[in-house]
Amino acid sequence: MARSVAAPMPAALLALVLLSPVLAGGQVVLRWDGSDAAPPPATEGVQVTRLAWSAASAETGGSRHQLTVGGSIAALGLDPQADLAALAPSWGGIAWNNQQDLFDGDPATSWRDPGYTCSSILSGCDDIYASPGTYEIDLGARFYIDRVVIHSGLNDPAGIVRDFRVHLAADLPKQLWCCGPMHPVAAEIRDNREPVREVVLASQQRSRFLQIAVGEREEGWEIHDIQIFGRGFVEDAAYVSDVIPLERPMAWGDLRWSGSQEAGASVLIRTRTGTDADPERYWRFTGLADQKEEVSRSRYEGLSLGERAGTSYDRAHWSLWSAPYDFADSSGTPVLSPGPRAYVQLRIDFVPSALAGGRVDFVELRAATPAATELIGEVWPVEAEIGEWQRFTYFVFASIEDDDTGFDRLEIRSLSQLGAVVDARIGDRTVPFEVQEADPHRFVVSLPRMRPDDSGAIVELSFEARVLRYGASFDGRVWDSALALAPPQSINAGDATSEYDGNRATVTTRVRNDLLLQVHVSPAVITPNGDGANDALSLAYEILDLTGPAAVSVDVLDLAGRRIRRLHDGPVEIGLYTQVWDGRDDAGRRVAPGIYLGRVSLDTDERNDQRLEVLHVLY
Image (cartoon, rainbow, N blue to C red; front, side, top):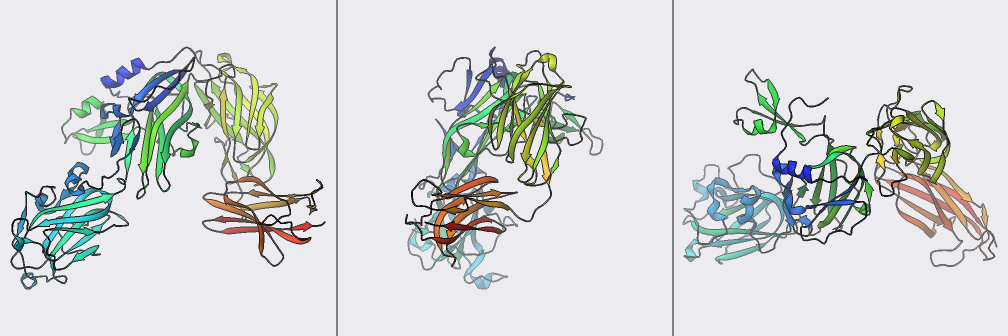
């Protein structure tokens, strides 16, 4: 259902729509990069639309937060000589109790304090410190604080701050505009005689709040400036592109990028897609109790603050932000956001760690005329015995319009083990098929071409599979093999056929207690004498039902339990694996004849599973 109140499109966005090209072949690449970056190499039949990092505008849905923007984008790095206190207002920070002169980076301004004695404070002191001598600042963001410099008594040595201590906190105190001396104490200086006193902190945690507590002194003091210096990167930085429109709904292909992600830091790339130009809905109060009504964006912006009832996310017309794409997949990874759709937006979050950061040089998103206006996939049955071979049928409902390309290839991917394709049907007829590509987790089948005349027909593909985890998914894509550059179009899970009630493309299983299944050794006996017969054995194992990080180690042990050879040690996902042992130890020497043990050990955050198999060595 269309939205009843349409938000008018901003002029800048309308201009982008009119400039967005869709070629006759339907191949489009959206490329985000620096305005001075070299253009990508031309590819015949593909139109590249370049979008500069610096062009993101709030008017068209874009934003840039705490970034350095040039030929690439990256989280803002801290200049070790930059005064964070003076910069705090630019990040939304503020000094407490109108003490801006203390933190403005200008020693020519000063704050005179008449002083105090602990005996005059009703609530007493914390050692020699009390609330009349405290100065606080909200830095506006969290930073690693390296040092604090206090300028005092520059005009009169009698005004030098003698005793003070520093408190740092990651968050603001619950009670603002206060405060008495706080703990923990990051540093304390007693009997200072220097007008410019530097205190090295080298904090190991990010801090947003800082307090300087000055010790009691009846004659008072004069502080000219408090400077704060840090290191590393800002805590978070983000780039959100403009809402990018195309002339018609497009099928999304691969996303690829170039950049770097240093150890300990994260670069999170996400996408979302929509059917109209604005992901937000706008509301006004009607004046009747708390009732509100939806209005256009332009009308909302013209309302007084009292009339505005806020905004909400338009989930009916826009997808949520996708899960982050694996940064290692920069050579190309399928777009997770639904399509075909006519609007797309890109988001990049930089999450640095200490001195580690990251950058993105460019991002490319490939789009094409869709194979079908709508594709819905469903699998049956939706329950299975884990680890057992079973027949499944994948149903595809395809709505194909006259300007869609149609398709003749169907791909199924799964982390479960895929076996033989048994048969194929279109509508009520069995059709010929051919398996073009196959491996244990993917196959591609050629089918008779689906054209607009076939719109609404159900494609059925039956195949064998072994489900290896609870909630295993079967993901489908289609394409037209005659269009070599066209990206495959993903099939959305849902109600593809009324014949079954599954309405999903995932399969549940009965819960098993074990995660490590069926360790096999072949051959049973090896004779590693170099004659080419039975010189090595294979140790095969399957990993089931992982839901988080896991690692597997494969070792050969003697009967006393001592490790003599490590065959593998590293991260693992569900699936079938094989390690080979050639009868030698870690030093490369042949082992003595006898009986050994092959141990496969799986470690997760919650448990450890092990399997042992007997290995025989003869000469």
